[in-house]
Amino acid sequence: MPVTVQLGTRSYEVLIGPGLLVQAASLITGRLGKCRCAIVTDANVASHYLSPLQNMLREQGMYAGSEVLAPGETTKNFPALGLLCESLLTMGLERGDLVIALGGGVIGDLAGLAASIVRRGIRLVQIPTTLLAQVDSSVGGKTGINTPQGKNLVGTFHQPSLVIADTDSLATLPPRQFRSGYVEAAKYGLVEDANFFAWLEQNWRLVFAKDKAALTKTISISVDGKAAIVVRDETETGDRMLLNLGHTFGHALEAWAGYSERLLHGEAIAIGIHLAYRLSAQLGLIDDGSAERVRKHFSEVGLPTTISEVAWQQFPSPRDLLTLMAQDKKVRGGKLTLILARQIGEAFMTRDVPAQVVQQFLAEQTGTSA
Ligand SMILES: NC(=O)c1ccc[n+]([C@@H]2O[C@H](COP(=O)([O-])OP(=O)(O)OC[C@H]3O[C@@H](n4cnc5c(N)ncnc54)[C@H](O)[C@@H]3O)[C@@H](O)[C@H]2O)c1
Ligand SMILES: [Zn+2]
Image (tube, rainbow, N blue to C red; front, side, top):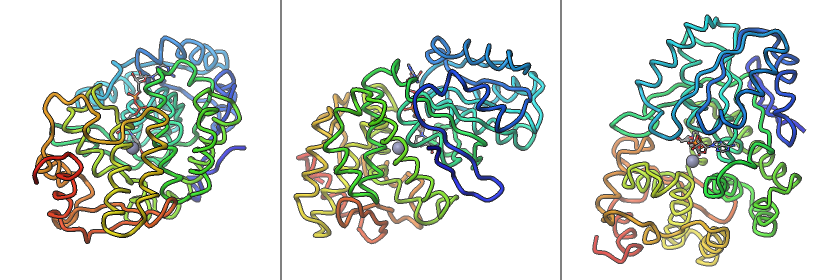
């Protein structure tokens, strides 16, 4: 069953399940008609999935150009964006044509941004090939690149016209990347769906074994949850902020690790979510048992849950982390925006926790002095 993101004239379908990539060309033309296509991907993904897709589109009589970028977070920058925009123009893409983002969140964010600014907006199809991109980044329209000042600080909102999430494409994804993406799925349960989190606690082994039904269910529930929130708050002025559970702490940890292989995004978020639950417990908002449930589940699937578990080059001090947290986008008027929890499945936003309290909390968590 596809999930539809209901945004009036900009509504779009998210197709989820096995066997979709092999019919991608007809899924695209059936919904969006025939036009020129530019496939944007990275070298890892290209080696598995580019030629079949390109050939399929050509068999339908369409132009299908491609741009293969270097894999990794460092590709999400201004130079790569500039080259990509020029390449799309050289391929002769016009407004009614299609940019197809084939890859993980890096490709989706970069290609999405290019699609939104070239000719003031070209249609975008997302074909996410990581679990993270399938449960999170391919849906909702956020695009972006990084700058020396921070992550995702330059970007636009540009909703795709179609999302094709083929669970079979996850077969080639490295296990560590799969695990990292899983955190964003668990996040939906923790934000607003206690039953889903409980289901994951029971069934995560099936998900990790890539059982088709379990994987499709996990992605569908996550996308459904995200779609509902995006419809309520497309540009993130309210409810959509709840999806940042664990991200204020997590982004600071990622920044301290230099956005390196030392700590993947989802791993940082696993620690961040656990910290958010621990802080909530310390503030008397929830019981210790709930925070412990979060820790136990993430540990069980093989994710880090504490700052000390990361193989840091240099251990971050509470002050270092607080400084990085204060640089996060989620700061308004100098006050930290935190997403905390009242229970499993009920997150809320607050700007009422003083920075000093957070610093003291981080000191306790790291066994250092504030
Ligand atoms: N726009 C949003 O709403 C949103 C939400 C969350 C995250 N993000 C962004 O997403 C990015 C992270 O995305 P990601 O975790 O998908 O990382 P990624 O795109 O870097 O992919 C991870 C790695 O897996 C490889 N890969 C991808 N698919 C593969 C496949 N099927 N088989 C083999 N290898 C494959 C890639 O080449 C890369 O090396 C970050 O930049 C983050 O800011 C955006
Ligand atoms: Zn995230």
